[in-house]
Image (cartoon, rainbow, N blue to C red; front, side, top):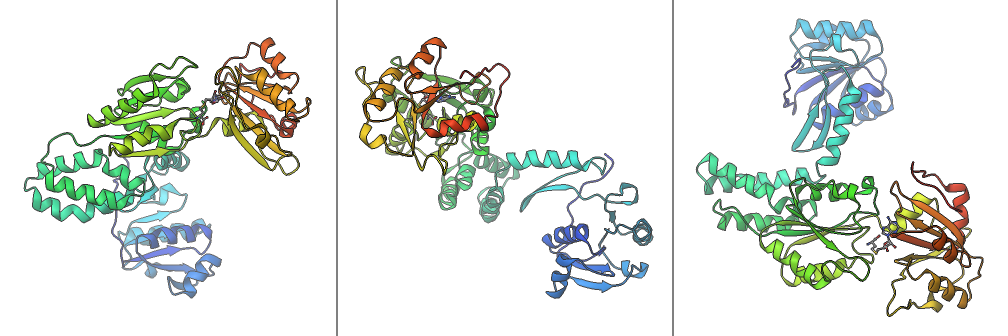
Length: 468
Ligand code: SAH
């Protein structure tokens, strides 16, 4: 290890920054975030520092740097573009044994400023020892995605209970076990989901009743896994997928998305092929209840968004009736994913002012939709589950007044490397589907907006072939 990492308490202590430009301003900002009293030496200040000086937030010493200005500082940063000045600052600091950082000049530094993820009071610092700041920043960016934004609030909650926990458990080992149990249980998720009051109550209760026993209530995360491309998951979906004990997933969840679930989580397939439900809906609802009651963190993973043709509502209704904690994580619905990856905006000022999402699912061999309500000028129609009933769908739309020439796109396996986009009209689409041996899942877009694809098509997966 080339550098010894520490976190300095600078609150109210004197720090010196030499330089008045943008880089200096960034360093000043960082020092101020930790409460330092900052003096800036520079002949002139840039606009940011000038405003701070005018507000009395920093002390400005106009002029060039003189070694005596280094006296009694706790930390010194040189941020000028003049190497001679930077060297003089480093020399003055070294003569006084004061830690010094010279921006972008590792050989003059006695400390480096890390890339940070600030979830105060939790702070993660990453350093490459000045060798590759870009690499350190990339690691930082990854940490940003992994550490929930509300981590700081979680730490503050823990701080509020610190003394009570100390009184409750005399032995340090017991305290540690208590915190491990609490922080790996459902309470942190309550904080991340903005339910701070519930989290506080749960922690109080845990303190009153929990005796270091393993267990506690489970919970359910109803997660939208998006249309297929795993990059389209939200940070929250990914985090919950990685901490679940068991995952109950649908047929539409792509293998690439399922791959991101914690490796040792139990996997239960809940199926739902057309007319061949692997587990009836009622049983899925009960299964979720049973798993949660066993104390498990259950990830209920669905394709797209759980609240769009996903029966997510029914599943959490049962959970709510049973008093089981749950949260819902939205996903990118097939309409958004497919339209984006096919280059077909769903609305457009020239072509469409509204968009309707409908299901083309057959009931007793027929598609039953409110055709009159659906067939409106300047409205895009997005049809989920429409492949089997495509003939009837196209026929009914024409029968209700839409032109036979109305453009239609059918997107097969949207957002994945198997994506194919078929473009035709209400008249030609049924024939295209037969000829091209189209397979589910597919999404159908009907409307003038389909014409935009000619210009906006951008996604070309290696295996894909566009069929027009
Ligand atoms: N909750 C899901 C929809 C479930 S209904 C969502 O929000 O997307 C299932 C239908 O979604 C399929 O029949 C198909 O019409 C559509 N669908 C889901 N994923 C798709 C994909 N990758 N490509 C095309 N259509 C998809």
